[in-house]
Length: 305
Image (cartoon, rainbow, N blue to C red; front, side):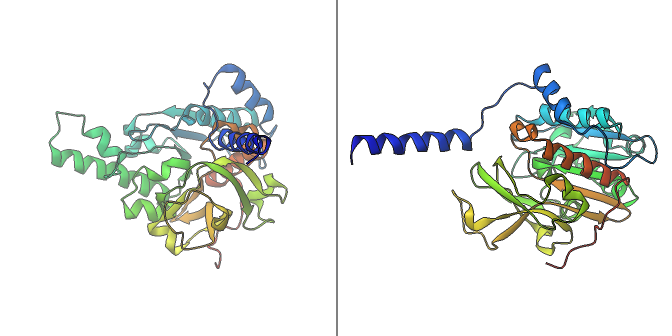
C-alpha cells in the first residue's frame, strides 16, 4: 500500500476515534455560563404555580462524568426560564414519603447501581452496620415503593441516561420507567430520528435528526411492551461495535408515558457533556421537565408501534 494512502487512512481513523470518545472536562464556571447563554429564554408554557424539582444524583456503580454537568443544566434551565426551582441531592432518604411530598417532580440523574444486583437503595443501606440484612432489604424496598407510589399519585419523573439502571432488576421500576437497561455498544456518532415530528415534545429539533456522540442504549423487560409514546429513535442497522445481534431495526431512546396519575419522561441522550452544547437538546430537556410537571400538555398515550 502506498505510504500516502496509509497516512490518509490512519488520519481518518484517528478522527473517528477522537469523535467516538469525547474528552472529559470539569463542570466549571465558564462551561456553566456557556450553557446559560444557550438555554431557552423562557419556558414553552408558563407554570401553573411555583414548581420545585428534586435532582437526585447519587451513583454507586458506574460514574458517568456528566453527572455534575447535568445538575448544572437542570439548574440553569429552571432558573433562566422560571419554570421550576431545583434542589440537588445525593441523599436516598429524600425518598421517604414526607420528603417526596415537597417536590412536584423528581429527576433521576444517571444513578447507576452496582451490578449484578442493581439496587441503588440497597447499595447504600448495606453500609449501615446498625441494620440487619433483613432490615436493609425492607428499607430498600420501601424507598423504591415510595417513589413508585409518588408517581402513581401524580408526581412527575424524569429519568436521564444511566438512571434507568438505578433499580434495574425491579420489574415494578421497569414498568414505571418504560424499560430496563440491557446493554450498549461502544460510544459512536448517533443519528436520532424524530418518532413523531409534529409532537410538541420534539419541537426543539425543528423536524431534523439530532446527531451527537453517545452510548447507544438498548433496553429490555417492560420495554418489550412499548407502553409509551416514543420521541426519539435510532436505526440499529447503522450501529457499529455491536456485542450481540439486535432484534429490531428501530430502537427508541427517549419516550414519555403515564404511570397512574403521574407522568414519566425518559431521555437517554447525554452521556457526554458536549451534547448539552446544542441548544436543541437543552430545550428538549426543558420541555420534558415541563411535561412531567404537568405544565406542558401533550398526547402521551401509547403509540401503536
